[in-house]
Image (cartoon, rainbow, N blue to C red; front, side, top):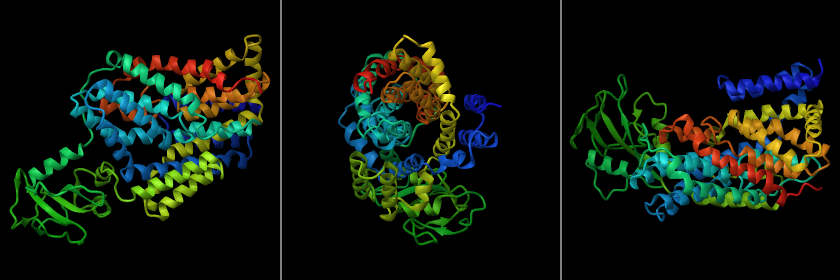
Length: 522
């Protein structure tokens, strides 16, 4: 069978699998690579080349950098500093949150920024007596716009920049994306401020993240702890645990102030039901609650996966909400050095990212275990597995065939119409499947179409990038959209209602504004 037909069949099956949402994304991507090899479309080295691609390594390293900024409390500190000055008015909060998440996203990606700021935004909403549903979709959608401010904003930017360099043009600079990103951020914030109240629902969520200050106040009252004692600092913290049935601790005599058997933690208080036990202590029973004090690392080590206790509030989660924790200065310096390397181009992007990740591990800002856990392996495998599909599109001539057909259909219509078709295809597919997979599928066609029409590939690739960031109409379009669904109490249709005006903005920027900055002429 013709390799072009085989490639297109594999693509159609992959898209159907993506849309079904029943098969893990990583499994689909790996199946695509294997199918391209088993059908003879690609050789084995070509089919597996994505797993050693510099782009994939750069993306993986950025997850480690993102983890360092979250776990050391740099993001929490930045959020508190900015939002504390925003007051309680909804418009002021929307503007402040939107600007903050856009800037943070440019450095640590959409999903990382939303995950880091979501608890803070929910707490701010409660204190301002606002429904979280009025703030959380704006948080996610502002992050999508902010992803266009720098190369590190999303894997899509990295993929497109590499492809631009390979297609005979040049790669996009680190901050060059901001030329398209700034209009998106400004337009997104304007639409949020103008239409937010009317298009966003007012709902009460089923569950909300922990308010660190409120939690500390509650624990002091319930365990009779001195109000002047700091329960959570950059180096130490507390966590509440419950003794389960068959715990080895049952029968152990405990009292406030004693060390745990390991010697690493201190018991600050003991509760049985609604009663706080006296300083004389008591023998531990199933169902007793203990308040433990120690370093954050010790708390996590002794409570995570333990058969002795059940954790009420995970210390790893609480730690992230403490501003400027241990290692924050080292993380900030390493981040700054990475940005300088990326902006100047002294070394390849993958080398800059790997150097930053290595420095974070060697300086003990991020442990080796946390570094591995921080990497979104689904994203890494998805990109690595779908890169061979882009290769197959180019080597078999499928991209050229589709581009020639589009060129014939668009003959006489001009480059703007051609770009509009590419953008529309990306906008539609990006709501149904991963925007990263969408760009990997459409990018070879965009480059081939530019070549067929003897135009520069840069406006097509940048327009494609803008459209790829517009995954706004469904909660499953990106993990960031899904993250805010439960805390905001959103329904499926809420995203489309508010996302459609923004989709129009992205279309206008991609089709009409981008060619003004990156002309069609070579």
